[in-house]
Length: 122
Image 1 (tube, rainbow, N blue to C red):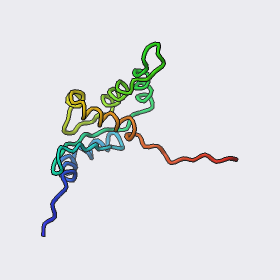
Image 2: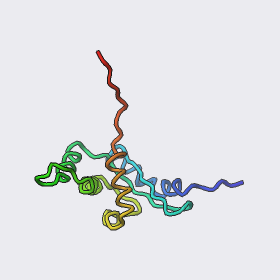
Image 3: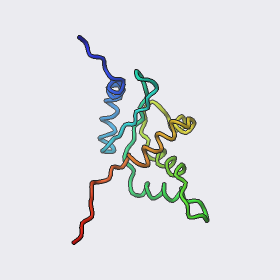
């Protein structure tokens, strides 16, 4: 009996050579899978931002005079800085609100994994 490949596996396999090249160039490569249906979807690949890029994204997100942050501006900047490629261009991501929100949340909250930490009294 042949096992059916998951569409995510197929996408990884389709991009395997490019992923290897990106890993050599950037180190860690993260994939964001966007499900179109249970049987298909698209993938977008990102590299980890530098501290300078994180700072620039934060700076561009500050609303002048209000001391508030615009998370959409911040995520748009990180998307532009860290997008490597995949099935969607930056323009396509920005044009589709549901994809933009998904990709924007990914770059804001999941692209850089925090180390596990805890506080203890000394």
